[in-house]
Image (tube, rainbow, N blue to C red; front, top):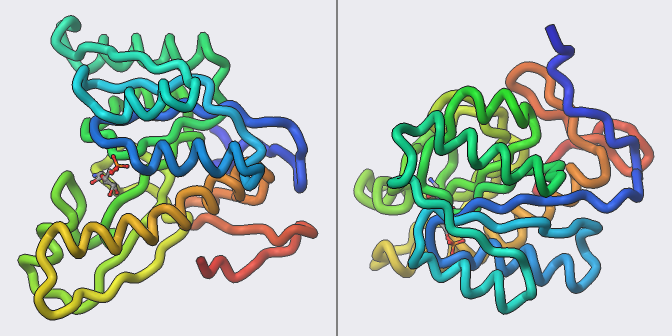
Amino acid sequence: MSSGRTPDAGIGACEIRRLGVLISGSGTNLENIAVKIEEGYLRARIAVVISDREDAYGLVRARRHGLQAVFLDPGSFPDRVSFDRELIRVLQENRVDLVILAGYMRMVSPEFVEAFRHRIMNIHPALLPSFPGTSGVADALAYGVKVTGVTVHFVDEGLDTGPVILQDTVPVLPGDDVESLHERIHGVEYRLYPEAIRLFCEGRLRVEGRHVRILGEGGEESIGLA
Ligand code: GAR
């Protein structure tokens, strides 16, 4: 039985972490992460971008940034388990340290979770555990909440149930529709996801059961506000 802790990268570890980014769509979060790396905010490299949709615009964005971009067709595999085995193979072949789900609209298999335990992050456009699934923005709007937000979490076997790393709020304004609300949510995502990835790359995240402790730069626990 493992200790349930994130593999220790060491405080302030300066090794460049290798990211594998999984997408299904537009890929603006992917592009934002690529830019944060180019600007030097993140000491990481995107080793591979994989899409489960051939027409995902994120593949175009990835290639524009000189990244290796691969389409893997779920239709050419008999089931989710064998598709995910191929995903694992490609990610391992590219020596990926951290898997980033960035608008990847497919649940990963338990085998996938086990292969990268506490090394898979997802970003969700709502305050989990509210409004999980693929339509978090529309569901929050339809429910009538006054505040929604963004969650970055480690992925476990459930649907958007893994330990929360960072969250921040976004107000729902009178007259909002899905598009206007999602636009403001995206703005928060572009800040929160790189921050969570940076914490991981600096070895400052410790998973203890459902809780993710964030260590300060000197190794002390910080309060973890975004
Ligand atoms: C993001 O808002 C992300 O939170 C959401 O998809 C969008 C992808 O945008 N993910 C989910 O809803 C996952 N259940 P992008 O392709 O422009 O990065």
